[in-house]
Image (cartoon, rainbow, N blue to C red; front, side, top):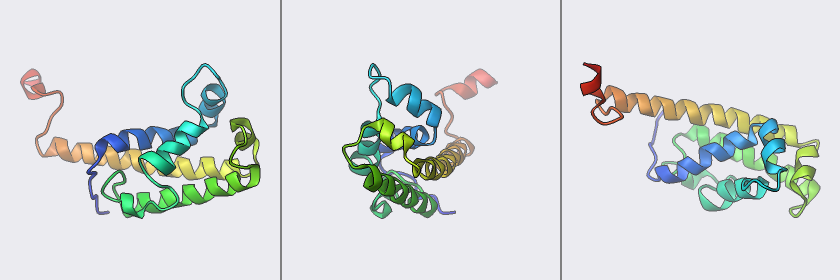
Length: 145
């Protein structure tokens, strides 16, 4: 695996939680359907398709907010799965219509696979920084010794 790093780590801080939210049906029902909460499907879609990535065409995001070709491939699969549901229920359908769509499980499954890879790659990158001598919090070496 080639880790291209990310030039826009702040973008990734939005992408990973959005994918994790798509991977969790419980979160979707408890948070997205609660009008008192900020996050909903529209927010997640804007993160993944408009603002910090483009799940319809994720290749240009390699090295920006996506680390590996595998992440690009899995993001594209998520984009396809979501697009099929959107086509079936309509772009203006309420969140509940998406969640109840027969195709929604494919979105959840694609997001779950992508979430696992995103998090594993971030952990590997963090470990690489640690091995290279970058420890957090700063001064942690002084505390350990």
